[in-house]
Amino acid sequence: MKNVYLCSMKRATIWALGVGMSLSFLVLLFLQINYMTRFVTLRKAQFDENVNRSLSEAVSNVELNESRLYLENLVRENLRDSMYASEEVDTNVQKVRSHYTTFEQTTFDNRRDNRPKAVIGDVSRSQMGDVIKKMYMNRRATLDKAVYSMIEAGRGLQLKKRINFRMLDQEVKNELRDNGLMMPYHIKVLDAKGNVLYRCSDYTEEKNEVFYRAKMFKWMDDKDNAFVEVHFPDYSSYITGSMRLMVPSVCFTIILLATFVFTIYLIFRQKKLSEIKSDFISNMTHEFKTPISTISLAAQMLKDESLAKSPAMLKKISGVINDETKRLRFQVDKVLQMSMFEKQETTLKKVELNCNELIEGVTKTFRLKIEQVGGSIEMKLNAQSAMVYVDEMHFTNVIFNLMDNAVKYRREEIPLRLVITTANVGKDRIGISVQDNGIGIKKDDVKRVFEKFYRVHTGNVHNVKGFGLGLAYVNKIVEEHKGTIKCDSELGKGTRFFITIPIIKNN
Image (cartoon, rainbow, N blue to C red):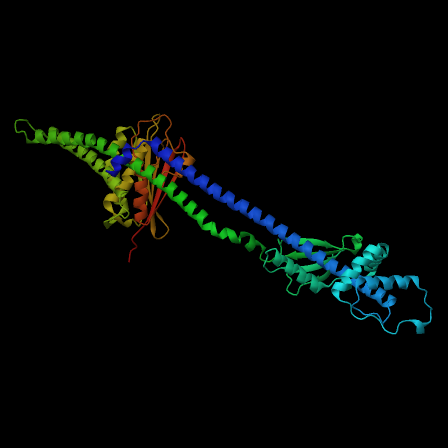
């Protein structure tokens, strides 16, 4: 029922189904891969933005802290020089300003005895902020000079002394955490010449690492700049980490696509086999009917007592029966070949035989057919050790198939010449060569002659019938006998098949 359904299906329908489903799977696979690619690109862009922002903020915080400390120290020095020890530290900003103004308007004696005996101690952070704001509003020029002096002081100060590396490392860590990047990183600080000023204790540098860099002290001359550089050992796993959930989906889609393609292939293969079986059954009826009718007629002639049966007539009738029996056997061999490919395993009935004698028997049987087409056959049985362990029926069919192919694919313009040779190959094998001078096979086709259902193209010649099973059957039987078969052919000059099988060693 299954074969009938496959035969009834049109090839175009199967192709349409296959192409439609394949395109659907391919589009789905393309969308998944495209989504994954865009996801990775977006994740990289987000990561780059977060890291660059974190480095920029960390560098800015370190620079602001340096400026704040410098201004605080400057304000403390001014306050110590301008305020009396009797003034309270916690007076409001207005009093500080009035004392600062009084200090500016009063001329002091240069004698040290008239200077204050005590100086201002620590100043609170909030008070310092108010003082700085008021001073900036009232003494902008003075603060501008202070900033300028800070820049000038920075030029002469070594970067190693100027940068608090631990603070910088901590600021980078905090900013990365605030931007959602909780992952290990390696940091180093370079000067403008590329010299390493600082690197973390576990710093390692590998090839193909992605580095991120931020510039410090941008307002300084290029030679006084510093660069903060970080890289992430787990960068690749971080970028592709979220993709792992999608990988099984893509793999599953690929498996489904491969399964579907293989299913379509099996459908076509089964359809071809079903068509071959249908053709085979329809043709076999006629092929069996003709020899059976001939044998039946010959049997009736032998049975009919009214007919005079001379020795010549008996010989003729027996010859007809023998020829038609061979035709029947040939058809049975075709059925056997078809059944061989339905089974996963082949049951062989191996016996000890002399390979030379087996080939000689097949040749004698086949000689008449070759002579009928005007050809000749030559035997060169040179193998000294020719005892083999083979299935007589199947191995006879192997030799018969190779000879039959020589007749089928002969050249019409010259007589067929078939040469059968045996020779020992090494110490434990026998070689069998079947060579003809037929039409030959193209190099591209030689590689596929042993494939099931494959038939060599013969141009516009359509007089050779077959199902593409003969050489596939030969190859299968040879392999079942632990042998090898090789085809050498040249288009227009002929073909040679060479078989090797193990021999039985003499004890």
